[in-house]
Length: 191
Image (tube, rainbow, N blue to C red; front, top):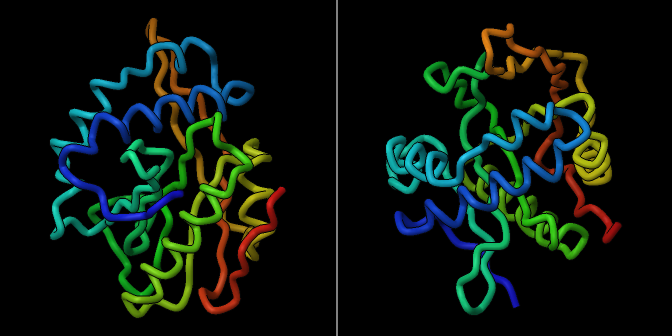
């Protein structure tokens, strides 16, 4: 049995662990191995604490999928749309899912669908009618997931600057913006 609830301050380490492991598995064919290998769970957890992501006054809300024994299986982060992906420039007319991340060993088990449904409900409950999100163009798994739910690319593109070591310039990864009217979204099928 799973439950979805808001992030708590004590969740930072478990959420960071899911975040890092999901990046390492999901982006293995997209990002250089050196980048994925240097991801640090403790550092990501501290960043969450520093940003105050569990604070009820934070503009973004993280929803956590948990087992009955409180193990974190995945999470999603939602809030107002970030203009130019800038967290300091928000357009409250639109909702945004910043990401849905699920432990790789639970992919295909419905956790992502449940987090998407909870995210849509959270955004609709705040009065928003349109959803936007950014996906790496090469992330075919995520693109299929969102397309099955009813989101479509709207033609907007961006470049995610992936920092590298050794004085090498950042690697630019193309991102696509997906959108949907919240009332028109469906639950993605099991596969």
